[in-house]
Length: 100
Image (tube, rainbow, N blue to C red; front, top):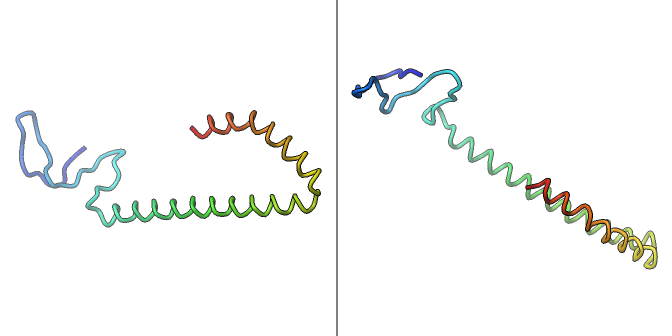
């Protein structure tokens, strides 16, 4: 790690103050361009993507419920919902622990 500009020296050696620090494994400093704004923009896009995905799953779930009820009939749809609710007791804990 080295300073491109040196402002002062501490007792134990050199230190950098308001300088760019470069070295292996170090990314650009916050003063290099608009890195802070880019990160906020990327986070905002990620949030919008998650919101869009949640909206999509809500709409698809609603369409699925209505379509299956009409395609299968009330009696068969009721039997399917009983089987799915019993199965959800097994796979929901697995999904929840996977997310955490």
